[in-house]
Image (cartoon, rainbow, N blue to C red; front, top):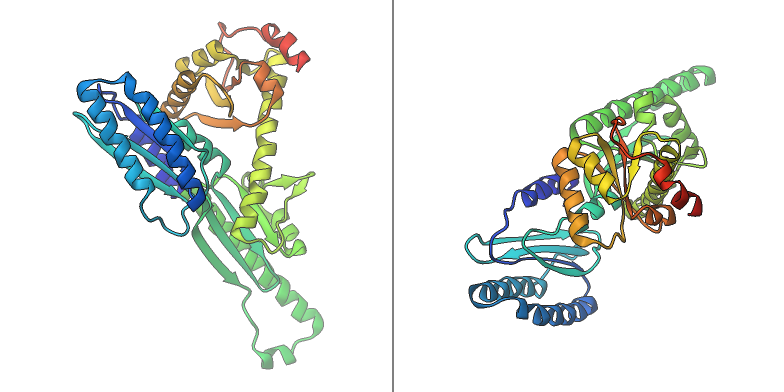
Length: 359
C-alpha cells in the first residue's frame, strides 16, 4: 500500500455517509497464531454488540461481520503484515479490505462511519521517506511508503577505460574522479527534487559510505537539507541498510520528531505564542482554520472526539502528528494544535501553565 494511495483511501472513507446500518472497521496484525486469537476476540465483541441491533439492522450487522471474518480467514500475500477492513450492509453496502506490509494495532470498531484513526497513525509512523545509499562507485535512491519500496533508482560514476587510465597522472585521475563524484551527487539531487515535488516525499535518510554521505549531505540545497533525518546534530547514516533496517531507524527518528513537536507546542503555550491545547481550543482552531498541525496523543481515550478531530484535520489538509508516551501532552488533555496565526479569541497560555510546569 503506497502512501499516495493511502491519501486517496482516507479521502474516499471521509466521503462515506452514515446510514441506518452499522459500519464495521476491523484492524489486525497478520500471523497464523494471531489470527486465531484475533477471531476469538472479534467473535466475542460481535456477540456482545448484537444486542444493540434488531430486525434489518441486526441482519446488516451480522452480514457485515461475516464479510470481515471471511476475509480474515482467506489467504494473504506473504508480504502482508497488517490488514484494515471496512464493511457495511444495508441500503448502501460498502466493503473495503486493505493490506499493508506493516502491522496495525488490533481492534474492531462498530459505528456509523468508517474509523479513520488507525490509518492516520499508520501513515504518521511509517511516513514516506527516501533512503539514499551512497557508495564510492554508485548511489541508489529507494523510495519507501508504509514499509514498501515504490521507487528504486541506481546511478554509477562513469568508468574510465583502462587504456585511458594508464595515460593519466595521479593528479589528473583524482580530478576526473572528483568530477565524477560531483556529477553523481548532482544527478541524485535532481532525482530527489523530482521525487519530493511530484511524489510527496518529506524525509531523506542517508546510508552507505560515511564520507560519501557527508559529501552528499553538504551539497544539498537548504530545502532538501531540511528533510534529512538527523541525529545528534548530524545526518543519521544508516550504514549498509536494508529497507527494513532503514524503516526501523526512521521510526526512531519519527519518535524524536514527535517529541520535538510536543516541546514546540509547550514552548509556544508558555509564551502565549502560536499554539493552543485541550479539546475545546483545538476544535476551535481546526474549525476556524488557523490550525497548522494537530498534535494528538496516540492513547487519547475519547474515541468519538478523536475521530471528529481527525476528520476536521483531514478535510482541511492539516498535518497530523500522533505522539506516544508524552506526559506533557497527557496533561493537556491529549491534544493540541500548532497555529498558523494567533487569533484574538484564542485562549491564553496561562490557562495551561500549571499543567505544563507540573509535567
